[in-house]
Length: 136
Image 1 (cartoon, one colour):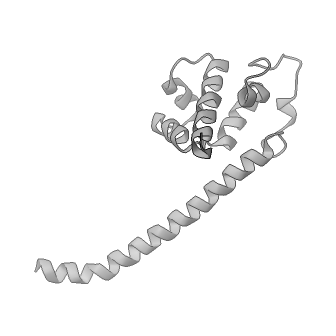
Image 2 (cartoon, one colour):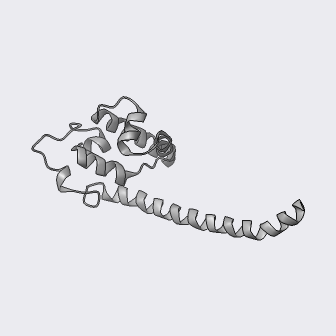
Image 3 (cartoon, one colour):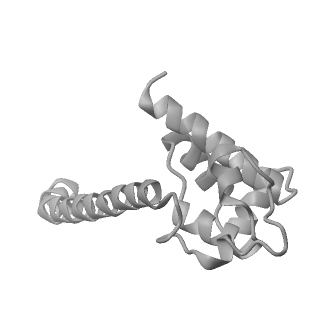
């Protein structure tokens, strides 16, 4: 199994555990909870890259055991007196390196997309006069 396939499987398990912890049975429920579209969930699975910042923030708010989400070990929900999640944010959690790596990738992709959009705008502007001549 290659790296991409491993990430895809991991994300699928991660999101399945999140649904289970929240007592959700559908991706639609999970998407609504996260404030994203079902297509976004599908894209996360396909790319093997969920929005960890978003999902982990929501998990901390709901007192979901982060260790359970990442490993499948332990209780889905932290005990009422367990403040582990409440004492950390994504920048402090044990998975900081993993979250950081994906966030850096996302930032890089956003920059690349912005550059490509600018290049496309430039090409369209350069091509606009020739299209007008051909249509006249």
